[in-house]
Length: 319
Image (tube, rainbow, N blue to C red):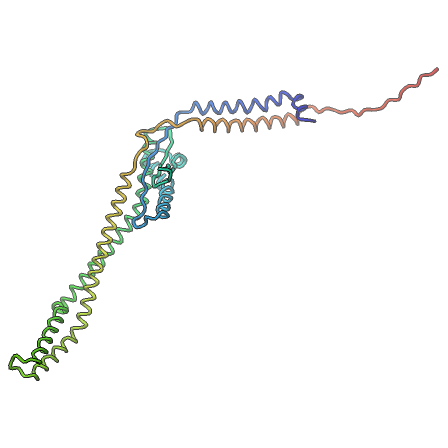
């Protein structure tokens, strides 16, 4: 049987297949239109790269990490706690995007939230952006603070070790070493050109004694210079870590200050997408119901009985 023949014989069924999805789609659209208005709000933030990682790849990795943090469980729970919105609603409504800047995607990230309470919606984007940003950069702040504290411990220990060496040797070994060298040089000059009544033998004996003193001072001078170098190096390292800690804190402060709401208040969300989605979903359900009814009607309807044609004998006229 051709489809056109089937349609002619089952006009009511075909009408149902068309009417049921249509009515269901209109009902879904009407339901979407009668729902309370949703509101949307967005906040923008310039996501900075970690200190010392200004390359493009590092910036992209930092932005990707920030966007992941916005929708992470920790941030979602904190937004729910501070705004009173349900955790599931926050998880479904919180999204991020990267607006195009000058034809390119820069470091700007936009955080979106949609809900039925405009005050909660506005608060949600602010909380999510701030918490995610703090989570992202607080790791760098903590790491920089730990490095600075460790450098301070090393610097303090180096200074303490140097002070202990000075106390143990009763002064500065390097100064005594230089003074002894100067005395030996003076005596050698006096030995070559006597300017006093001292005998050369006595001068050589004194020089020998002073050389023995230099031999004893050499290890002390070497240890002292090593400790002094450690103090200088640790002081430089401490200055570097202190500057890094200040840079990270300034980075966090600047990033937090860059958080800007796109609009002062939440604005009504467009219902076009919601209406289309509800209408399509309802029409699909209606089509399934209509198809099911058609199948049930096919099973329960009357079937035509086809009687095979028979050839009857033709009577022969008699005279």
